[in-house]
Length: 348
Image (cartoon, rainbow, N blue to C red; front, side, top):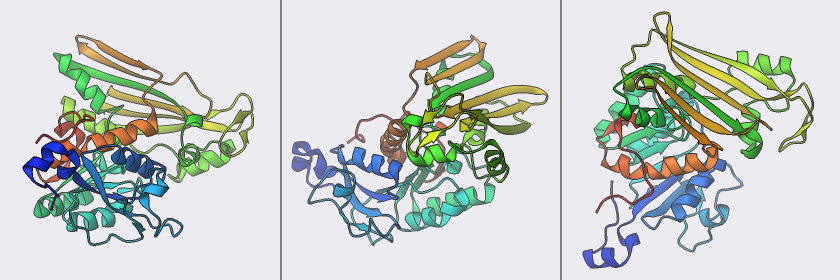
């Protein structure tokens, strides 16, 4: 691992003289949002960009994200040999099994990794062998790997953990998140089944191809961080049906068609539900909000009117986590192990 530190005099004059080199891996809608935010941070410097889509290869990263710059790297289909890079911002997929080869490649290149892969946010129970493999590889290479984003990673887990600092005891956690999918990217609208007939939706849910990924990971993360001994975790996905014709990115949703999902994950300690996470995300739903309720001593409640903006907040959490990952101990880490991410640069 190597960073361009420059001289002490130039560092004081120009923050970019000691900027952190970044590799962008995956340039879908979230990857581009992450890259645009990196371009606006003087303490970060894009060194390389990777995406497998042929239409992007050879293009300037700056042009693709709307930040033209002669210093922007060209996009390649494979990870190039990089010098002066410290961290990879990985934004390719939700499935940990599918992205593990990518993560191991980045680790092998000596890069810290911040990934938006939802199943990486707390993989120790659902994907134990993969988690152990990634952890061992990262520890051996002396780098840190983190899975994060807005959800999982913040809205329904880290935010709850931060609020619990004011509690003497937490007996039960409830989180309710409402998001209008009509304001979000097209891939997310498709992931929640917008525009589908109910029967087709239910078949896709049964096959595991629809729904939000990450609620179960958030339940496990909360159980571990709050000391709630979970004996069972369950999850359900039901359709939210449109009552009136509702426009979406691809045409319109007819009355009776699926507008989105009502998804719930519950963690039980014996017969008692001690963690309940509910996500309603649908085209045209509203008003958006995030609400956290802790039952214990004392009871605590937090509500964010208008909710956390999903795509913007995801890019923010990823980029703001970079200094925390650089300072963390090597291996596979989870958000509850790190100090709160902030927009500021790493300490000198």
